[in-house]
Length: 395
Image (cartoon, rainbow, N blue to C red; front, top):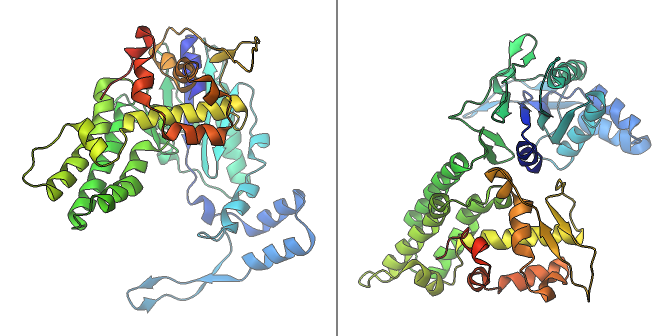
């Protein structure tokens, strides 16, 4: 995501192809897998054990009480096992080297694969098409099949020429302006706005919260709020540091899910009492606004990055001054021309992090996380300079 906003800030275009492998875990040839395991150093008794684990496996299909004949399984890694994903990752570990193409960035997570190219002016053949050709060849050699109809191209940038890409002379479908593409649970659109993603997760969260309220007849508020926190809140907060919205309409849309649920619960246990305001409901049920929770999640992740606990490419989105007086670190946030860059994770969080109390910033990531639990975000926002405060929604 940071690569995308950085490219747009520099008036570049980005073409991203999302690939889909048809039944990836089921089509891995056993003989080729064993050969690759040997090449990466898994040999001797361990390799023999894995070979035996994969060999002579059979399966049947059950329909009601009827079973099909047993069939031998000559390919694929056992799904639902711990070893299965590890074997698949090892099997495709040579993919980045085989498909390496200048100008192409490859992101791989299990069988989820995307490749993108950042460019200013394109004259010759796109390096992304060269990568596609290599990837297609790799899949052919390794017994994998690309589900072309499930692949997609995402075009970013105002001057993007929307180049067509082909797999076996078939055009890869592109993401229209009305659609989005799912990337590890986050829905990306051509303008890098988050309204489509937020619409999807709020609808799902509303269905889940409604099911909880209708299915669980308890009048115990702790039980009901705990169920909301366990099953609904993760839907709304998964990878929130990527999409944390800044528009009031999006913030309110997410917050409304919790607001409505707390109202339902309050009505159930206090049917004749007037509904309190949302901030009073939060206090009554000992809940925290989702907006404040997202800010804390941003700060927590940013602190881990500053401390070096996690490594994330940030494209010089912020700087730490060399001046160091009694452990003081001065965080310098950059200026931006595009909204996408201005509201991206590193840029927006750097603006906040430098106002966090110094004793918190000097703490370990584990201690920082504990301190954040009782940190008053409302008071923190009130203490910000006016030019930053106006970017926050107050409850």
